[in-house]
Amino acid sequence: MTSLLTPRDDYRGSGLVFPDGFTFGSATASYQIEGAAAEDGRTPSIWDTFSKTPGRVWNGDTGDVACDHYHRVDEDLDLMSDLGLEAYRFSIAWPRIVPAASGEVNQAGIDFYSRLVDGLLERGIRPVATLYHWDLPQYLEDAGGWTSRATTDAFERYAEIMGTALGDRVHTWTTLNEPWCSAYLGYGQGGHAPGRHEPASALSAVHHLNLAHGRALQALRATSTGDPDYSVTLNFHVLRGQGDGAAEAMRRIDALANRAFTGPMLRGEYPADLLEDTASVTDWGFVQDGDLATIAQPIDVLGVNYYSTATVRLWDGVSPKQQNDGHKGAAGGTAWPGSDQLVEFVEQPGPYTAMGWNIAPEGLEELLVSLSEQFPEQALMVTENGAAFEDEVAADGAVHDVERTDYLRRHFTAAHRAIERGVDLRGYFVWSLLDNFEWGYGYAKRFGIVRVDFDDLARTVKDSGLWYRELIRTRTVEG
Ligand code: FCB
Image (tube, rainbow, N blue to C red; front, side, top):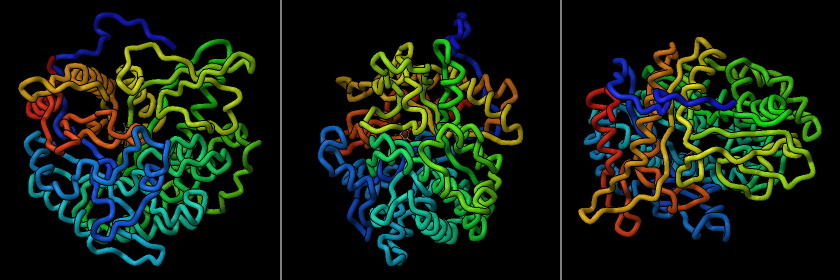
């Protein structure tokens, strides 16, 4: 589907006022910013192992130091306050909390997040805590990782520990961030930790992540003494189709990427076409009686991460296959078990960000409207949106990141249009507060609205951060 752009459709809105109650935030993730990888009892996660394996991450970068947020948390809290953030989405490093297979709880790890939460509340910023943004303890991966059902037991227990520790103060609990990446990139395509190339394992990881989500929600609800909201964050594929088999190609990828998660989580079932498409890869024997009911716990808000669109078509099986899936690069395996020999991902029309991702604000509006049509009762929140560009530091030390500001303005405009069309959109978190460790790309890609100098770790608010501060202050999108 291509859209004909009229002048109104450059998505550069002006004078658009966001409703009261709409939350403006920013997001980060533990491994990407914390550093202090071996301090206060933390043990390695799969990302420590992966990043230290030669050839896995650009430039051999690791999260050992990252933004050193672990030691600079007060400075970073003050930054958030200066920007006027209303909420902060962070993630908890599981290996700080339960560092060893013995299951012993590490109080120093809990204390760190407890201080962070208190620091946010003191500044009037709502804590939005994600339990799993990809840093699986290495000892769990050694025992099978997300292909093992025992990992869901461990996750439930970890959720119980965190619910007990922070459930009196956290505003929103998020179980998982982008399980699509954990399962398909981690176990199928291999571009993410643990870097496995096993199509059947990717699907078993899908199920165990779904199950972990449901079990964690139960544990968080049982232990949180405050009145938190409960949620999960998914990265939806907004698809365009090409050629004769466009509809079939889109259906297949929609099943694997989107409905493999929304099906069990929000409808209590795996889509029949997904099971059929993947029958040659697995019989889904890892789904046990009662699992689907466990997974389908109610959530208060569905987190939506959106960056760009993807175009697919049926592959003719002869010409060289394009695999521009626009997300995190190719790494030899397949992110599309059961459909990798049938579907190809083709070049997106530009312009592009520094990740090579196409800029398509209309995709965000379309996604939000489509989700609210599919799940009319479900409140939504954009838990990530943002862009990497080649930032330059001007002579006066400022970063005039006009492209990022423009990207954000256009996507906030898209969100505003979705609200005008009746979508129950509760908030928006810019990815990211800080330049940080961008997974397979290391420190080469900068998404922050605050620059981090990776030599001296100094923070500088970029022009996009100043623009965002004004948006939050006035609640109005301006040029
Ligand atoms: C998302 C991840 C986040 C960051 C952005 C750019 O897939 O959740 O950690 O890497 O992409």
